[in-house]
Image (cartoon, rainbow, N blue to C red; front, top):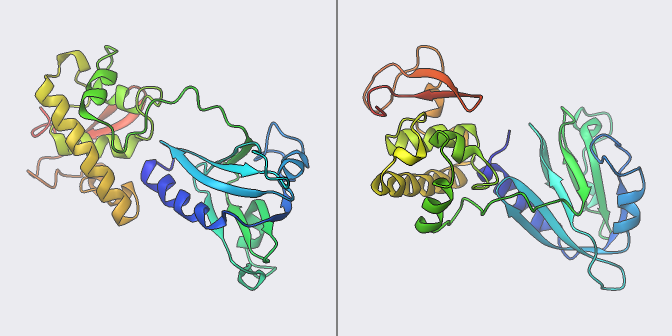
Length: 261
């Protein structure tokens, strides 16, 4: 599942579709566009423009304007497991008919310059909807103040990894990013948040910031230092101990039993 760094990369691509007049919308995939019926999203967007590209955590959306310049509905786009956003500047950059990728377009917006915005999704697990509900999201994990980070994590009694993964607590941290951050901070993912000291929490916050910055710069959370070692027989790249594996909050979890004790 894409995490904050991957969604931020997609948001920057989505920004390339702004301020261009929409001439057509293909929203016929009634699974990706549920609960809308085919034509509902098209009717809301045609003639208007996308005016802003935003993200909170893993949730991404565009502001829109109608043909008359009034505020339109928000257009929410979720990448699912393997979806990606493609924005082109002209019809010449469209995939050739007959290629496999051409059959993986699940949602398409066409602009008056001939360019398009496409949700390409082989597995058909992405989602497009109007006015997505953002009310259940906590603050974005990127740039979160240390005091806010501590206060939100300490509201519960769950394991620290479980709290990091709760999108209503902090939005944007997924399974890989949580393991990387906890490993960098040398904190056992099974530790109860109430048992962590302020020093522990501040160290966790600093390492979350660093992990996010590195992942955004290098292309995603898969580039983390410990990620490639999260496998049977994998060893801690810092001390060489064999990594431990278990389940925390229902999620597969890897940690160093020596460094994160």
